[in-house]
Length: 445
Ligand code: ZN
Image (cartoon, rainbow, N blue to C red; front, side):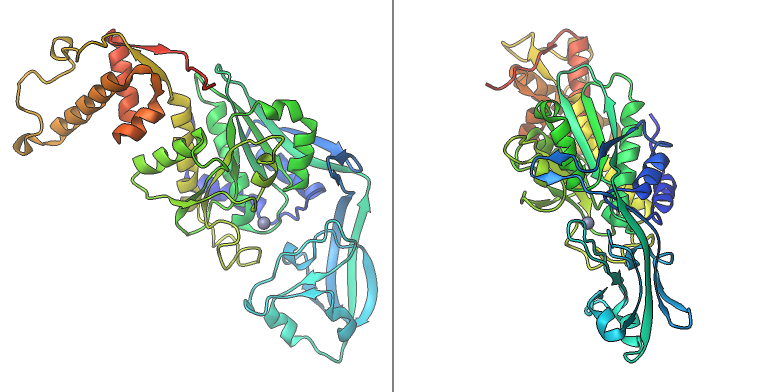
């Protein structure tokens, strides 16, 4: 299995960053082609005009040019300089305006005067530009301006990518991210990057236990369209992750599933604990990203999100300040590793039953216990090797006590406080020594 380096993660981020994406169009296609170089994806499309539950897939938006110029031809706002300058889904225009008439089409953030805001108008026909308040303040109030947007809205497609990685268990997990935001590194090129490398990690994993359904979709309309076209398959999904905003400098956090104590939540919380990181837990709310759709009554897929600077919470959110300096490769790697640890806990989780339920087995005669009595728990002897033996004995003892066929390793880790990995290796040793057997997980009724 190939683990990415921080440089590799930031390299993909840098390639995806300056692409003019929207919920449809060539920017999404170009981005998904780049992702194909990392992840094992199939690019698919649904036609414009398709009715999906209460929504209709919109026309495809194609944009080649958008600028505001002075009448002597000097471009003062140009979307080639920054894709956020034009409101997403702007209609075409080529006309002259007084400042007063232009003003209602300009968006700024007075409280963050250096930032260009991110604005879209997918479902209401309009046009507009976004610019920094500082730049807006400098515009000549008495001048006239030439405004050009070369865009078309035509019947086309909504484009997305899917990757199905089959496993040997009956369980399938969803890993979903959104690929519609342009020119913002944390929201959400970070999610696209980490999802792509997680896909590579799991695609290369030998003896993959569970099945994984990966999707890179335009937010909201993409998830709704996908649910509509895969309704039955989605009803069989155990749980999942929505990857969003996972590369900022902020503290690692976890937005819980709507259940709060589902297998996904428990695996993530153990992953945090075993890494020695106190998770910043955020209870579920029906807001944010595509967890809104997956959690709805017909589907009820418990999905969680590990984030570093989650949407809404950081000053740079939905602005041009969410750039390639805001997101580092190291921060992307920290989120990637936390996702991998949680997924590995799901992969390694097993149920065991003891073959010696009446008393403690005599570990010494099986070579599972130090032969010199009294050596354990003595601080004078607590060198590194002894500590490791102690940890192993602890894990073995907890396994022999807990393995009555009703607890999985996740439950035993929660109850005992033992690191999940120690319990896994202890369980394997006990199986090898004929003291435990792995049994099929009993589904709760
Ligand atoms: Zn967003």
